[in-house]
Image (cartoon, rainbow, N blue to C red; front, side, top):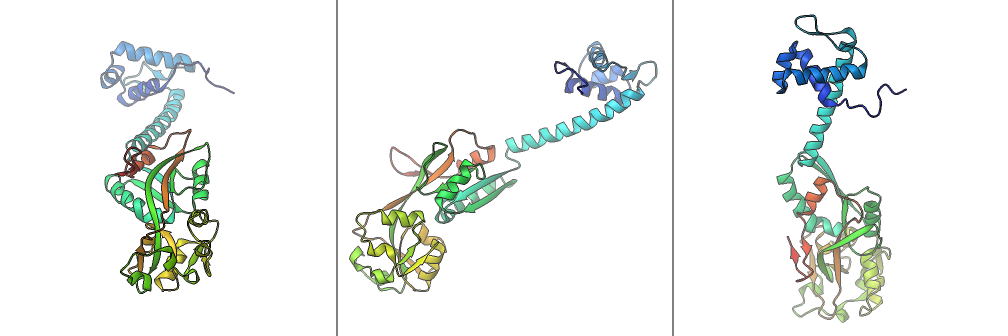
Length: 310
């Protein structure tokens, strides 16, 4: 059952006026506190009482007191205003970036560069914002952006959807990744594809974006994409390489993921393959304020110069 008409003109202004009268015990003092003339305050309370169908204040008492029905009403009004003020404060803190949460998806190689630098700078400026990082392959990250599990993601190519927008933020050239004691790490001359022994290759599972890029590259011999050892992540690849168990073809940033001095990245003179890293956002929805601000800390490729802009 509806107590008030949907067309009621009663609002927070009326509740604040009534509570002020109760607190001051006087219409004139309440009017002064609210910065209105007494007649305007009296009319506000009259409208409220008319809508409620009963008196809220006993005007014959000095100081003015609430009626029994008015007291019950004002207790509810106080609770309503308190919750409204709390909600408004929380909303202002979110809008003012004093509190909030950013959910970020990232390919493992994007966590070190550029994500870690952006997080460090963002945290200095906005320490009240919580940050969640979910690292995964591009397809799953893109799906999580579409279904709103993530605010945005940093990922390579591999997922196309009308629900996603992509902005290129970096380009990462492929090369040979090997142990520092490997003969190709110590070689003084440029490395070429013919120098790489297929028996030494540690390959990625074919579902990974990097593996598909290598498999689709016409200038790369198929023998260098198969590998006697196969892993399901670049972390596993790099861990094995750090123990001199083999070599891999990886983007340069991916080679730095585990930050090991044992691992060396070498350009390949006759091999040109670049993995682009994209910022993925939903195409038909706005980002929360904290996520929007965080993105401003990320580099973006200038389409005119093809260079990254901080």
